Amino acid sequence: MWPLDPSQKEVLRFAISCRVLTLVLQALFNAIIPDHHAEAFSPPRLAPSGSVDQLVEGSAHPIPKPLLQLAVDKGYRTVGTVEGKEPPWCSWSLPLIYSYIQDIYWNVGFLRYYELKQLPNFLLATPVAILVAWATWTYVTTYPWLCLTLGLQRSKNNKTLEKPDPGFLSPRVFVYLVHAAALLLFGSLCMHVQVLTRFLGSSTPIVYWFPAHLLQDQEPLLRSLETVPWKPHAGDPPPGQKVPRNSIMGLLCNWKTCSLLTRCILGYFLTYWLLGLLLHCNFLPWT
Picture 1 (cartoon, helix red, strand yellow):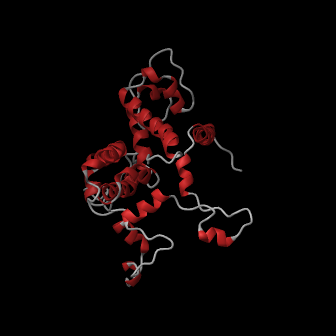
Picture 2 (spheres, one colour; picture 1 turned 90 degrees about the horizontal axis):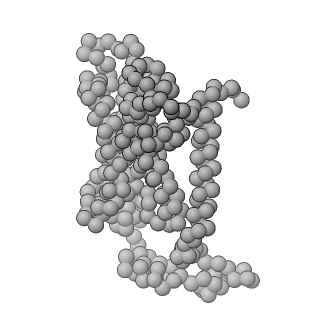
């Protein structure tokens, strides 16, 4: 295996530690808060003899009556019922059942989710939406001509930048920013908004690059770490503080002296991670 420099080793060690801690906490939360209602969604079990007839007849593990009633109320098709006609999607020239399910059962469509009762879900997705919108605004105001020309022309004089910033404010980030802005617009208008956080978090690096840019640009504690050699900073961190090699651990160890912006960014990501483990692994709505 190729050798790693100290910073890469630290990042790898931190990522592995976070993953191990996540698995341990998930197992712990599952043990402390078991979801007995999830048993209702388990597949039917065979009888000790393994008879298929018993499984088909429903004597082994019948479907709970509340679920059957829910299916009747929602108009779902259930096993054993006789339907007079086949589903409409079967007669489509391109039979796509997923689009049919989204439209009929999930109510997915343009502005369909904009209801007063969905306000908590909008609040849940607000932080990540603000991050991506803020990142878009910051980049567009920094490179207006680059954005107006869709990255095809770096400057009005048709000259490329000789030494572009290697960080978030780099011309090479433009394509990622357009992708993130398009995902934000589509997710906010045409999807269930409560999935916007994981949708953006798993689809675009802007969600992570821009908070890192804000921390490096506005957190005094990071000025002693040489994390941004292309942009010198004025001033030094408060005396008597010891900053570890890992920047995140350094900020957490000196939480009280961090700026308000740093506390908001780290507090949001840590809270979402911890509550997400606690709620989502127990089949509670948190995505």
